[in-house]
Length: 508
Image (cartoon, rainbow, N blue to C red):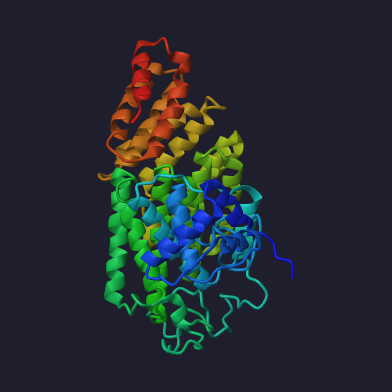
């Protein structure tokens, strides 16, 4: 049978500058340091990996992932190297081959976080692989979220077992049923009927109780507060470390209620890791975390949570000036959440949709989406909202409206006044501990003033924004300030603006 090259490995190998013999020596040295002194890789073996698509056995994929991560200064997993799963050629990084199995989700979670942590330890700040966008991203997710043949309908009352239903301890008909964690054939085993615990490497994993899961859930709340207050740069490593540990806990066959809660924690931490990564400019890394978050939420049976992760990826794409891709992704998020999403979640989705429409210059569609956001938010009941959407309060609604109208004002000057109104209201409503959001509100306000022909007021608020940006660890704030700087070009002769331009030029 004719073999084909491993194009993923070939492409990345070319970037390293190594020779085949050099890579072989590095593999042997690293494997010995990891406790595998018997490994004896040579040049011909490396050639077969590259040219024949030969798949080396463990621990070689992990060794190669560590070596490529260090060399390239960006997260590289064994899947990125084409060394896991079935052969795939010229494929993208994380988003392909959907749906993922539970085992693959755990592997992606633990390996990606492990490589990211190693990157942190060595002081790299690489941006990783290129973003996946356009039809490839949306089509893959759409296929993943659509039930395939033989998949039970989770809403079917005649199906005695719903693997994705949210666990309700007060429901006497909850389908969790009897569970034997030592029987891998048990269909209630969260690792699946064919799971082999040994294959998960459970040396460090063990059973976990409800109190420990509660502690992890409380940690998520703390991490969110840190992020909102000071940006993603300060605590990103701590969040990723906690996510890695949760991934390790998920390799143990705990009872189903515990496992579902762990998957929820994993989804929350992955979404937060993605948001923090986006906040500091590691956008391809962020996208991978958003994908992992969506898969983890699906494992927990929480499709609205999966959709919220997609909405974060959509916001990221608007920020990166890919509004058409963002619009397709947020529309998929809305379809995914469906009737299960609460009013607050739907309102938040509509604001992201409006931002994408504004970036595309579609004023009428933008305003309609904002109208739907206001209507949904008007019927929201915060006491019934899940924790992961609690950030979207009145202040955030006005903040998003300010951002949307400020974006729209570049093609429709009449929107500038509305942007200023909403930005001022957002600033009035912001609670303590939301310094990054306040910074964005100030940037929206300053930009809207400049677009409205008020350079003196724009310069005043922009200087406030510069000072506020200096107090948070967020690359995104400086991206927005750079966009604001471009708006000052037409007012470069105004004294207040001249001084502001110098401050902006000095940067972070």
